[in-house]
Each structure stands twice: as C-alpha cells, then as structure tokens.
Image 1 (cartoon, rainbow, N blue to C red):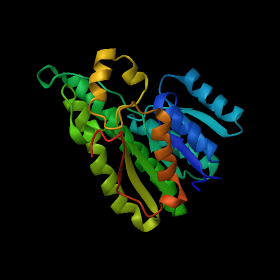
Image 2: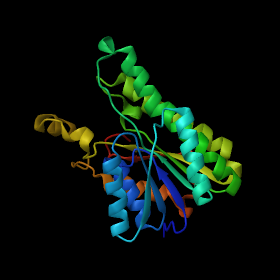
Image 3: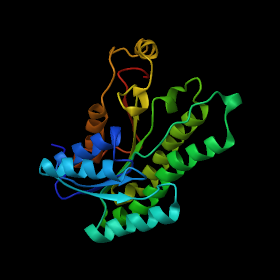
Length: 248
C-alpha cells in the first residue's frame, strides 16, 4: 500500500527537518522527488544523494517560494522536464516569535509571504499540471499552533491557520479533476526549529502531550506519504494532526 511508483513529487523546503524526511519517505515509496531549497544547496544535494544511495530518484531545484515569478518558472520547468507534477508538499516555512505588542511589521510580512503566499504560489503553479493529468495531491504543512494558538506566536499562528482555509478552498475547486488538498498539522517535533529549546522548556511542553514524548520528522513524513498516495484519494480538505494528542 501507499506506493508512489512513477509519481513526480515536489517538496518545498526539502533540505532539512520535516522536509528532508518527507523527501526520503516519498522516494522510498517509489516517487521521483524534487528537493526545493532557498539557500541550502549543499544540504539539498545531500538529501538527493541520500535518496540515490538508497536506490531512489531525486534532484534539486533552488527557488524562493515567496517569489511568484521564480516559483512559476521553476515549477513549470519541473513539469515540462518530467511531463507532470503529481504531488506537491508545500513545506517551506519559517517562524519568527514575538509577543504581539512587540511584533515588527517586517517580520509579519516575511512570515506571511513565506508561509502563506509561498504555499499558494506553489499550489497554483503545480495544479496546472495536475488539472491536465486529472490526478494530484497537494499537501500543506501547517502546525498545531495554527489550530490552538500559542503565546508569543500570534503572527506565526495566523500564517499556519491560513493554510487550513486555503487547502479547503483548493479541495473544493479541484475535486472534479481528482486533485486533493490536505493539511498536516505537526505538534512538538524534534527538528532544528525545536532543537534550540532549553531542557526546562521541553519538559514543560511535554506536559501537554498525552503520549508523553516528542514526535519525529519521520512521524510527519508517514502522514505525508499517506496523503500523497492513491489510497488517500477520498480524503480532501482534511487536517491530519500529528501531535501526540497535544490538540484534539
């Protein structure tokens, strides 16, 4: 089950963390993976090399998802080179934490353009190919914070919540062409983004996780593989929570 043989998958922000895990998991199921990066070309090539070492197929593509022109050109090029794009995992994103009263306009603008505009840019570009082939899977990477909120993350939470509405609208627009759009909302996952937390902060967070442990990027990647598969063809407009019960 959940095989992706012959499928072409683009993973934005695929050079590290959850993005890297998604690349490796999709490739393990037979997909040809395009690893997108903004600045970390060496890291992206390392992902592609790791996939190849395991017998998979991968290539890298550097572009800024928030730059509409660049994203359109790069994704059109990928679709032409491979004949289509079957799966888009819109994972590229960033977090800039601040209490609301101290929130800088520039920081909010950066968050919005990367986390929301970037995801929509890529979905719009990739959907052209999906509509033509009448098959597609769009997966947005949100966050538990987008559903439950968090102190010091008003702007970040707003961007992650926006992806839920975007995915549900896309799901309705493209359902007639067998293109699904879903959201993964990870909770407390062991990544670079959470690696800088103090031991005390981590312990406090775990008190709110019923399963009592930190999730791994592979846990999120497993959800990504499912939503990208043929078996998930009757699932659209859904938010799949990978959070250990942190939010229900």
